[in-house]
Image 1 (cartoon, helix red, strand yellow):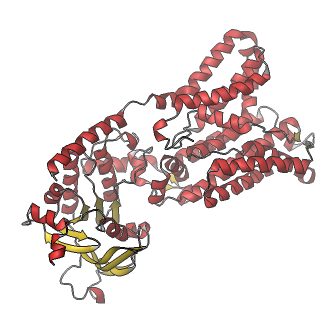
Image 2: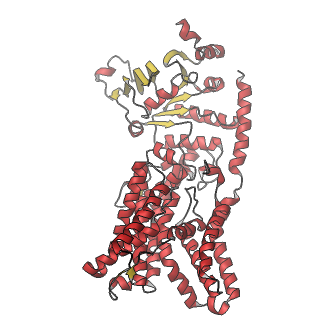
Length: 264
Length: 331
């Protein structure tokens, strides 16, 4: 803990896991993010809402190292960081489950959980690493068991999984690597109703384990079911930040439509 | 906007999609086992036609010996096809490396044989660099190399074969069963690399989805470079083995060999769309090709018919095994 760090002096108690201030990002003539500030706390599910083009994906890509912001600061656990690549983000404990899930369709669950971070032995690292396949499979079996995730077979290609199973594998990968912050990009968008419920339960489970979660969604029911706090983006700006409990459904909807942004 | 309504809709869509995903895919099964079935059918067929000649130990030894070079080159091609690429330059590489090593054998003797995978790797590296950093399709790069290497052979040897010393290590490599041992050793190493090394896993991953492999931070470019270097090195080694068998580096060696090698790989169950395949399959695929050639000669079919059949077998194997859903476009 870096209590004496100048940047975190004003904070009472533990600093948020991630503190974002004044984030700006421009693509050509389009200002995708304008001066966005945000705190992300452990054990909390933060809903990130906004219409298409509001800047949600630019924001999470700036946190996960896909985009480098033009201006603004990010502090991780009280320390100033610059997240210049997905690798840096992962090293900080930030795992992103993108909408495309980044699963390799022709590999099995174990291969996907460990892809790029294989367990192994032998004289070489990297490409020459000799994989410990049994150890990886056992590790994955335990991880899935803990999370109560059921798949057809440990050795089946993820291409044969249902949408929910694939989503669960992608989330399990984030958890396996001891993520401190998990970013879920529309995790329920392509799922059947029971599978949606499963993912929502998994999300709550994550938060209860002290993980910070950013939950991006279009679905108002998901928002009410799973989030603690809401940040609504509108045209690249933070339009509102509210506590989910006590905010009515129609208020949230009108915030997404940008009404409060105009009023403020 | 009725959230409930939209939710039910996504559920319906998903159910249909799930059903499609879980559907039994006969092409998978055909692709995986066609080589074994074909080999069995060929042995039964030719065995029935000419039991006294075909079904003999010495004839099987001949089949193995004849398939050795093809196996070596096809093992390299397997890596290339699993990442979803193609290497059309292997035949010309065989000739170029054969001729260059034959020339070198006059200076350094039999050790020139050990030069063949190195020279082949250099050709592969040129392919790889243009492919990876030039960002153009591998079939264009290697089609160019097919012509470049063949032209170089003709320039260097002035169109004539370059002999190697009649005795010595280089000449001995071609004597049975040495080529078969080379294949066995290579097959074991290549299987180990594909199944056990992180490199092998990334080879499959790139063939499965190259964009996601990049997104996941895999060293995609380095893997692709290495794969083409491997293919070049094994084509070079194959060229060395042919040179040893015929006693000279010949300018016509390997003509059309890219087709034979690709056929062996595809019949062996490696998917032309990438992401699937095995070394064992490739070996069996090679045996199918050489058994077919051997059997046709034995039952007295004109050798040129083989060339026709090679094409037919390749297209037939692809027709049966390709996963059409994975093809983004046909052109």
